[in-house]
Amino acid sequence: MQQCYNGKGLRMRRIALGLLVFLLAMQAAVMPVAAKVMHIVASFTIIADMIRQVGGDHVEVASLVRWNGDPHAYEPSPDDAKRLRAADLVFVNGMGLEGWMDRLISASGYQGKPVFTAKGIAALKMEEDGKTVIDPHAWNSAANGIIYVRNIIEALSAADPEHAQDFKTSGENYIKELQALDAYAHREIDPIPVTKRKVLTTHDAFGYFARAYGVMFLSPVGLSTETEASAATVAKLIKQIKSEHVRAYFFENSNDPRLVQQIAKATGAEPGGELYVEALSPPDGPANTYAQMFRYNVDQLVKAMKN
Ligand SMILES: [Zn+2]
Image (cartoon, rainbow, N blue to C red; front, side):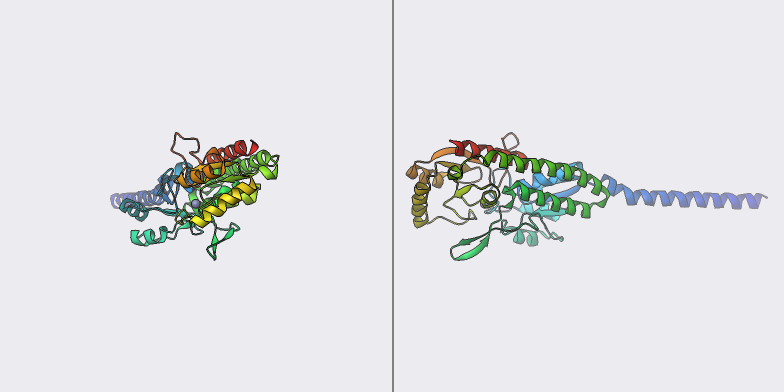
């Protein structure tokens, strides 16, 4: 009996131990996912904000280019490479915006592939110095912003399926907000006569806005801030501004205002204020989220064009 009891007891203990090991293993398998926060690196502030809106508490997002920073002409630091190496996911715009990114990724040792947030957008092409180039500033139409958000929902859900429902819920709410902003832009701009919908900016960052909402943008610098305007371009532009009766000019928060100021002076165009073209404002500024930035730009433009 004793033997038998001992045998039973041993078996019981073995079962209990087995169960404990099993439970611990289950916990080990589940715990890191449940408690996991994905470390995400975004190339610039606009997509960093979009990722935060969709990812909520499940993500921690660092932007390489900071507020008011120029995403075309960025010089990555050794810290950026470290951040990339430690990232779970990396997001870029693509379309040729971040010319510095490929080199940074290979230098960092990051093993994954970046997520292209502008994937699936009907690209605008422009002729520049006899070459056809793609306009990368797709986010400046809110309808395109929605495509970015869908790509972000998809990428976050694939990387962290456990929280896919959360990404879908917050992403869909965010999309509704962007749909309302798209409608807002039309409601504000549509009543303005087409002859008045013309402004001068520093570089060609509003092609998608122009196509979506019917506004004409003139600028001395091309699609990338890395190009320089020649004297001939500037002279031609001054002529065009006069003949088109463009009356307002805007600074860009991420670019040198001097050239556009000079041109405006030569044409009599009035300052319309500042536009946030490819970088958010600091947290205490008027455009510290993508949604706020879009609305702010619409309001600034409408105010200037109505005059
Ligand atoms: Zn740009």
